Length: 627
Figure 1 (cartoon, rainbow, N blue to C red):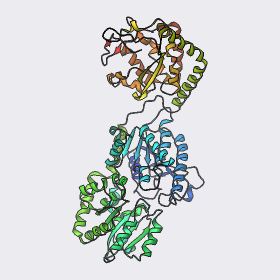
Figure 2 (figure 1 turned 120 degrees about the horizontal axis):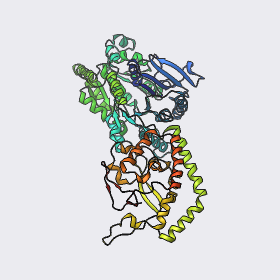
Figure 3 (figure 1 turned 120 degrees about the vertical axis):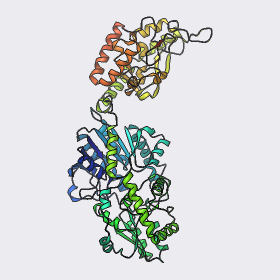
Figure 4 (figure 1 turned 45 degrees about the vertical axis):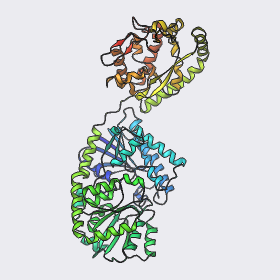
């Protein structure tokens, strides 16, 4: 299987196996899959560009058996939110060029955040003659988390644009992977995706690397942790992380010199956090800065308790922090100041203690209890490791992910990518020109219908479009609304007017549908849009006719039209879906002109119009039908 991953923050070679997709990609490549990652050139921790990538739009390298394409990314995204958005945008543009240059893949994965990654992934999956299944992975609810943390204004133009991009990404993806069950519930609640479109492959831990790091004595000596109960926070130091609550907790623990809070990581708030701790004269909290991912397992193994904190924010009640799995894999108990999904997991596993977010008093109290309960820490650490082994090893999750990829149906090779763009452009250009050229004829026909058959001039009815989405079709009216003594519609042959027969015989009644083509609901060529009530009567194979836009004319129209029975018509529609090409459309258009001239297949013998479609066996009823 050829797997293409768009992941801006894929770690640089030599950074270790801490990143989810670094490990997944390596595991997949080692299993024999052809894996390529399109990534950014900015270092994930510092946001700066290593010298080997500077001045280059695309750079190619390998990470073990994984092919990596590094794309130009503006530097300094860690300095401010504006620089971060510039970085995301720059990567989106450069990654789109890499997507166009890359050969077709069997599956394409886009990881968010950043949300913009969905755009180059769509380019790679869709703008090809043979499209590929597209998986959109949501690692954080974005832009919702940016809004709830106050980074973005809910009413700003940028926020509205990002929410629209989120809706589009969820709608266009063939599958969505979420890292927590709460993400799935949120997407379904907001109507962004049906539950059956969403899979759940959580983050997990690199158990092989982390569980080996059991001796932390040397690290404790080097970092001056000896003789302390060390509470380690390993992660980003940003606004959403609310690391300042650890400083407040340290101030409350001034009477416990045996307790040390160690913070490892970097981010826009680290300098100010370190400065505040020094100003308060706190000696029981240390900021060590960033440490390479490959060097983190011994650091985690050297601590006594792993700490995970975030801002008190409803959005964060849906997340599983990555660090939580790393702590558990190292058999370290978790002190969790995050409510919701993460708390439920830790408490169910018996792997740690919960304290409310941004409540320093309760956080400090929890640290006191855990520092004094050595046996309890050992018990919780063992329970966490057991849970990871049973549920969240990266190796087992990578296998599960591949199974989900293989289960994805191949996207239909119809009306997508560049051929679809050409078809749509031709349709709309032709419709616009035809409406202008035929406007005198349209006005004349409208006046004749009004004079001979009365109002209304147009017949409008809701029909299913592509994927069954309803729209209103427009035709010149050819029947009267004549009813019997009991109010029932009379048979079609009694309601069809003389002028209506002429319009049907010449197909002039179809001319107003050029407006439907111009608006994008119809194509010039495609299966005819039938009635809404037929949708539930199709077999799964027959329902494939709705994978493409319906048309004014189609393959069944030029191969018998209404002279065919329903089984024949629908089978021809499915054949068109499976064999669609621009050349086939041109042939159908030419044969349609010839068919109109010969007036072939206008009606089925014994019926003025096509009988009702009754379902599986193709049963027909001779009752009146809407035109």
